[in-house]
Image 1 (cartoon, rainbow, N blue to C red):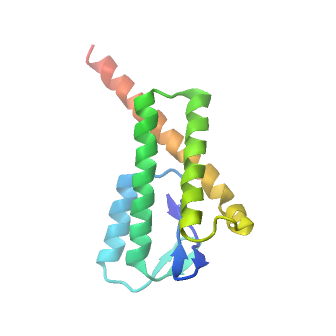
Image 2 (cartoon, rainbow, N blue to C red):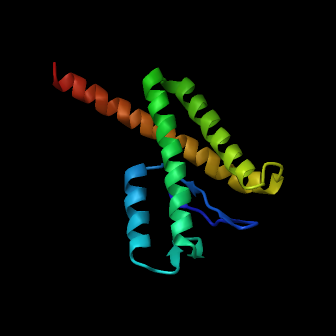
Length: 144
């Protein structure tokens, strides 16, 4: 997941990311950046960012929510179009909650800006589920 240019809001910034949310690697990289003590980080394509602790905390919370979507889809055994629809619905609900939390629930421009992120993140979550399902199948075949 690649952090995108934050939306500036009253009292701070709302940062989201786009792409396949590989939770473990993003947490490690984000923590490593914060641990340097840097006051600013320059993210590819999106310029400089300050408030690195706050950004890392937002991304951690979002990754935890994405992990929950993956776990639920795996537990329910979703596949194919049902999986894609489930991930799209859940990711859009997550973004709606983020927008509401930051006072942007009725902001059509914010929704337009985040449309690509919502779509990419839903695809990324579905990919994570498919990858986990594939690994489980391979393990099952190996134990036969």
